[in-house]
Image (cartoon, rainbow, N blue to C red; front, side):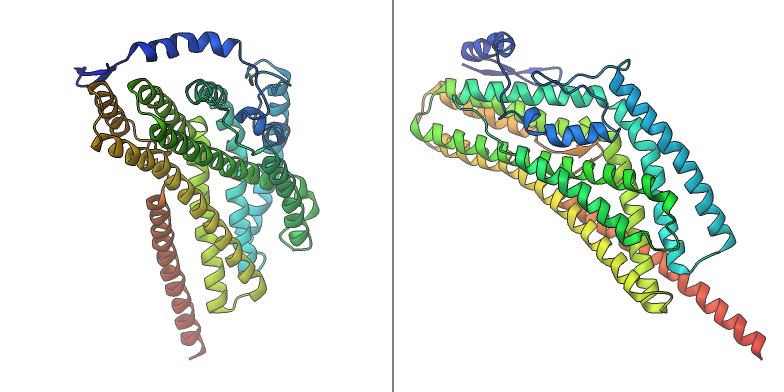
Length: 415
């Protein structure tokens, strides 16, 4: 029977002999295990290869086995060469943009696009370095997925099928195609000379690949959490035993740890992306509203800028909503099944395991966070909207005051 005893001010769960058997043989079983197409790493290979070829993920992707990362490797050398080229191009682009901004060449929207472009250059310059720093965590995260799926098979007796490989392949092609479309829409603009095309393509490709990876990973976690909740409910409907509850408790704890690691595997990148995103969205909305109100420049470009900002906010809402659904599915549905078992008449061993399971859920909540600072959920989306509106109001007030002063000055001169 599992017992609960205090240790170091917390709660320590003493495991049952069945649990000891699962954990002691798990490493041996993992060594004998062969990866199949159903596993997370193999499902994500299309998008991982695209990230590798774009220079932001210097890991070795074998035909069979798990990914590895070594600082002294050809893949790392390739990534460094790509990054050096990006830095050189970013330097010349930044100098050209700053010169035009200081000389005040171009209309209002050109200045807004230049500011957006500078944000993207900063992101592209920092992105590979942050990815290199987190590569060890990323590889560990892939290994944790494999370990979880192996344990899932041992506890439930069935494979965890994610069915995301085709989705990853389609998204990778879609991202590349939409990046080319974005180039085509901006190629004839005065703020976009032809020599900027390569760096612009790399920036958009890297940003879209990261966004796609996050979205597909959230889908994988949602499928996993819902599958685990359904299997646990079905198992408890067929028969309730202390050993079964204990096995699912350890499986749930592994899933909760996996959800937590999702935010830590690329935490530095997500933190930078969040900061750049808020800056880009603020500038885009400011450019759109200021242009529509003041009628400065092409209205169609301002509307396009507003639509782009809207699509970006929709994407962030989808991510936050998916993260919220993952937490609810992992926690709420399993808790509901446990409370149902608790109300029924069972043996002492079963009741002890149910209580241990419920306390495990309360002690180790399955939340996705950005470096542990902010949880990704609908509350984060509300915070982003509030921050955007605050910055936007301040900038628009400053802009209105500047225009009123210029109007007063012109009136005084005319008099």
